[in-house]
Image 1 (tube, rainbow, N blue to C red):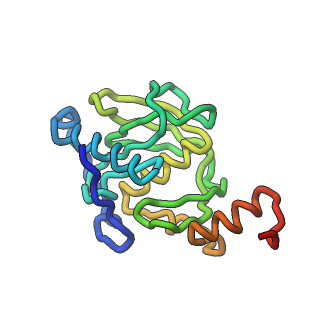
Image 2 (cartoon, rainbow, N blue to C red):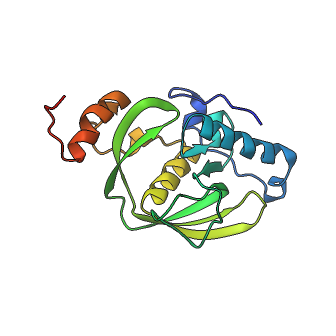
Length: 189
């Protein structure tokens, strides 16, 4: 297992469309090692998702989640998000991308912004064992999956923002935005 170097904003790999992985190669030692290394890298940087282009691999693969538990037919905000490796995913949005929520990105460290996303997505993909999986993601897991899927098409969360008014450094986000959304007085120190 290894901690991989994360590509940062400006690196061309983040703007390229990733290539599909031949389903026959999914269980190969190379792809399995990449998946393990991506999980290790995601945990090392306290992320909840990581796409292959973010570790300089132009492949249609991302990992996400926090808990080692089975992937069910519905992944929602109830409980921890199951760990998943999704290969050649296909998404169908259920609803318009109108729910604003805060996002950050390991490739754009220390920056946050409010991004509109669909509240629910239908997901079809291969898992790391090469099996086809299909499930519905709702709420925060749907947001994470849409964010990581965008990386496979060379799209960054900045590209989805409708306004840059909320664009903020992490320190200011925690100092001003989180406190404001929790109903605290903005002038309190």
